[in-house]
Structure formats: C-alpha cells, structure tokens
Image (cartoon, rainbow, N blue to C red):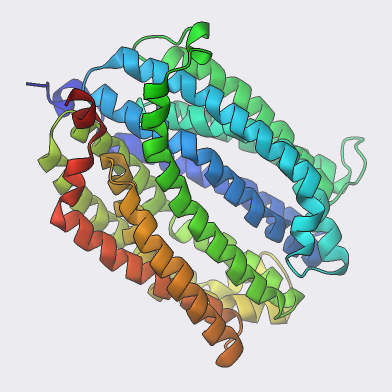
Length: 452
C-alpha cells in the first residue's frame, strides 16, 4: 500500500497555484512589455512582432514534447516514491530538449524570411517580423532549457523558486527593452530588434539560474552523468505523453496562425487590434492557467500514488474555482474594454475593433477556463491522446471553417475570428467534461504500466 500523497506533501492547491499564477503573470508581462513599448514605436512594429510570435509559440510548444512528458512522469514517480527514476528522467529531459531546441534555432535562422512572407505581410510589418523572428528564433534553444527545468521543479513543488526566476527575468527584460528599443543608457535605438535582443539576454540568464536550481530541487540530486545517460525506457515514456500533449497544443497554434492569416486580409489596423486584444485576454484566463497547472501537479501525484478518487474530486473543485474567477475578470475587462485598449494606442479605429472583440469574452473565456483546467489534468493522468483527437476535430475542422464563414462570408471581420475561437473552446469544453466524468482516464496511468 502506497503512502498517501496528502500525508507526505505539505502543500496543497493554493500553495502550488499562487506562485504559478505570479510566474505566468510575469511571463505574460514579457509579451505585454514588448507590445506596450513597441506601440510607442509604431503599430506596424506591434503587428510584425505579434505575427512572428505565433511561430515562436508553436516552436515553444514543440519543446513541450519533452518538457511536458517528463514533468508528468516525474510527478507520477514522485507520487509513487520512486525518486531515483524521477531524477534520471528529469536530467535526460533537459538534454533531449536542448538538442531539439538547437535544431529549431537553426531552422529559424535559415527559414525566418520565408515563414514571414507566407503570412501575407507587406512593407514595414514584414521587415519587423522577419528581423524579430531571426533573432528570437535563432536563440530558442535557451527556451528549451527553461521549458524543461521549470516544468520539473514545479512538479517537485518548487513553484515559488520558479516564480522568483521569472520575476528576475522580467525585471531584466523590461530594463533592456527600455535601453534597446529607445536607445537609452548609451545603447543605439534598435526598435523591434531591441525587443528581440532583450528577450534573448533575459532568457539566457534565466536558463543559467534554472539549471542551478535543478541541481538542488529533487530528492536525489542530479549528477552530471545523468544528463548523458541514455535510456530507451525513459525516452519512450517521455514521448508517450509528450508527443500527443505537444501535438494538441501545436494543432491549437496552427489554427491560430491560420485565423491570423484571415486577419491579414482585414488590414494592419485589424492585425494590431488583434494583438492588443489578445494581450488583454491573456489576463482573463491567467488564473485558470495557473489553477490548471497546479491541479495537474496534484493529479499526477495522486494517480502515481493510486489515489484516483482524490484526483477525480480535485478537478471538479478546480473547475468551479476557475469559472468563478474567470467570470469576475470577464466583467472587469468588459466594463473597461475601451480604457484597456487605449493603453496601447490612440488610433480610434484600432480601439473600436479591439473593444468589439473583448465584449465577446463572456462567450469565449468561460469555455476556455474549463478546457485549461481539465485538459491539463487529463495529460497528468496519462490520458494524452484524447485531447489530440477532439482538438483536431474542433480546432482544425470546425473552428477554421467557422472562421472562414464568419470573416469572409458573413463579413464580421475580427469579431468573426473571436466567434470561431469561442465555438472551438466550447466544443472541447463539453468533450473534456464528459471525458473526466466517464473516468476512462484512470486506465492510462504511467506507474501502473511500469508495474505491470
């Protein structure tokens, strides 16, 4: 009989979630700082950087193949008190992700110009996007280290340490943004390129600190040989969870890129409004994202310890909490949508376009809150393939078709894109609710597979 996770660990959902919330908040501030500071340069710079970041986000999700898979397995092994296995998988995941990150960085350096030309960008918007993608994408291997290590130390329960690193990274990022974008402290004025170099330097410093933390975090300390010791068994387990987890996220980002492609036909004002509105929207679902991550850590440990009933009940509690906080945030954003858009630009057309889509938050964000919470828990339980299946149907087949219909047939413009995203979120929300209620996820535990 395994010992109860609750008896061994002295932290619960709140202990895990509030540092994760602040960490994600700070991470989002990096993107917001770029958008806010670049808006002082030009709306074209914002549109170009926002478009380039769609590819960056897809690449980061590819890095999640290893990071997500390893973190889920480590959580289940910790729950089963198998600490040596947890340490070896953690070290191996860092090496694997670094290799993947180097390959992705090389591809961005070679193909960044072509990728941006494919997005129907023109003039200054195209130049800004190409330069930003070459620099940030070329150093994305730094994010590979951050992705792996931060996921591992979070499932260990060291969420506060991850938060502190994010805080330091953001302070450095904002200071360097100010210096590089506007040419302060003796640096040349670099505009969008300055924002790119600021991101690279702050990530490099964060990666170094995260690696040091990893050597301290696990019950059995990581040794140098663990980073270069190959294990087919561990790699297979990482990929079993990681590939479908990342594929589901990649499908989401592909859908977002295609919807963004629709927006390019609406003009530079719609592109800028989309970027500003998305920055505001991120703060609506931020709590659900943090809560979903914290819940997934507990679910992984509960499943590893054979306490499926605790995992089942924990998710329902988290869903109710996520919906409640999301509703409050939606009310705030809806009430102050014009003022929030006005923080980024004084262009009345862009403000109006952004405010019009933000009013749809009540429709979109409630479904997204359910999705974020339950999808994370399904992956943590080992049930990683179901989100891919429902994601392909909903995001690719239904959402993109609906988006084309709303934008080009119904002529709803940017509002049509938001409606298409809302359709997808609610279809998947209903599907994952039914999946969790069915308890079919209980048959996919990694530890059960190991012991059989």
